[in-house]
Length: 57
Image 1 (cartoon, helix red, strand yellow):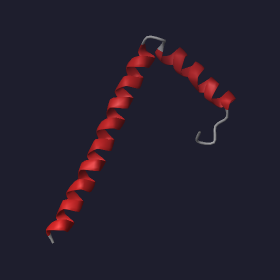
Image 2 (tube, helix red, strand yellow; image 1 turned 60 degrees about the horizontal axis):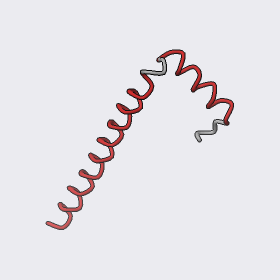
Image 3 (cartoon, rainbow, N blue to C red; image 1 turned 120 degrees about the horizontal axis):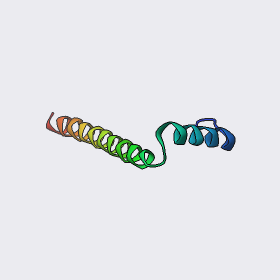
Image 4 (spheres, rainbow, N blue to C red; image 1 turned 45 degrees about the vertical axis):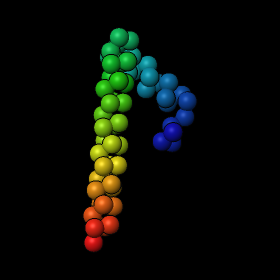
């Protein structure tokens, strides 16, 4: 995972808990998931538009 081992991932998780707190972490994960999902949908839509433009030519 990005060249990180388990000790590094654990340290990052502990720091995130200290900074954001246990109640805020799920909210951040949810927001990140929605953002990534929207980004992926836009990529798929742009690919569909490009394919339809090629078919019209």
